[in-house]
Image: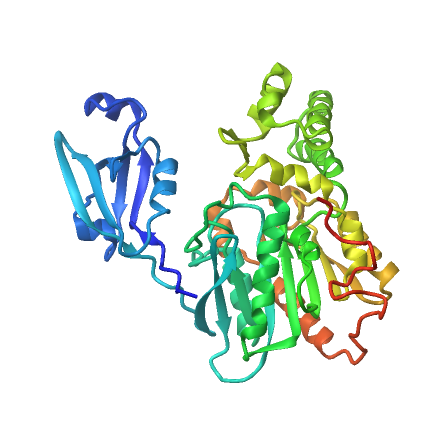
Length: 459
């Protein structure tokens, strides 16, 4: 398997070009992005890009918006040629050079290994933090939320980074998996195009690949599913059982129920008028029934003015069937999962966590239900814990109103990661590893833990 090259690193912060600058520079409307600053040692710096330059195109691909331009550049790899057409004041210039790669992440607690796993016609990047001292260690396999953002080189203030570094510090191998087409990953289809079940298969392949590492104790591998990761974790049907599954801020009921309840409850939490909220909720029920149950595609829905208005206010719909950053079939498949069946089939110990500051996966009963399902079919295997003073992103929050009030406060987020969450998770994993009871499967169950004719997914 050839090594995946590093993704390219431009190293410039970009802003949209405002109307006054368009007029002053005689730019075509919706063309050009403004360079806010250039990082030292970056590709941008090496080819001579400066603060205040306006990038018009890269390799003749027009820069129509900062988001679109970044998406285009993200497809480049280390060593690729780049030619930027820019304006510097009134002067048009062409800057040429070779793209440098994103620096690899480092850790104060572990050695970092970059590897890859085959997926469809390409590969996805895996990033593994392993203790520096040789030996065999327990592991945490992390599955992130629904977005198509990279897990590589997370910002120093990222709460996910702080969570995983905290677990690494306690002597666990930590495994992160990029999604299709994200970061260094390369395949003909990207995260924005693949379905929910296909992505669960991607994580399943990454989990199976852990068997090749001799520094991992394969009898003590734990899966942590955060948010949407808590849906995908039980859907995986890997070649060997995880010791435990931890989920936080997730859903188990059919998603038509979750979406309609979310639309009503979250808006009341945000202070919307009761009568206005009820009218909005009725529109939500009509939309989600047509979208989730009847499986209408977005191009059909926008023909209805009421549905078009609802989508404009509640979903970021883009051409190509992308809604809120994922293909619409990703969302529709959520309704087709049988998560009750998936949880009933798990052979792992389960820890279902709900933050008392949660306003996204807001229903504690949802998380109690996961533990109840597991314990009904595998008595004593699951535990539910209500986590005090914690929101969806592991931030310290007194309660839900406090979590809502600080949701856009970047400074607060940087300073208030709840490290008690790390302690809770690692203590449960340590306790679970110490259990003496047999982990053997029922003789009636197959390799994937299902009874004959059963399965977690429904496709």
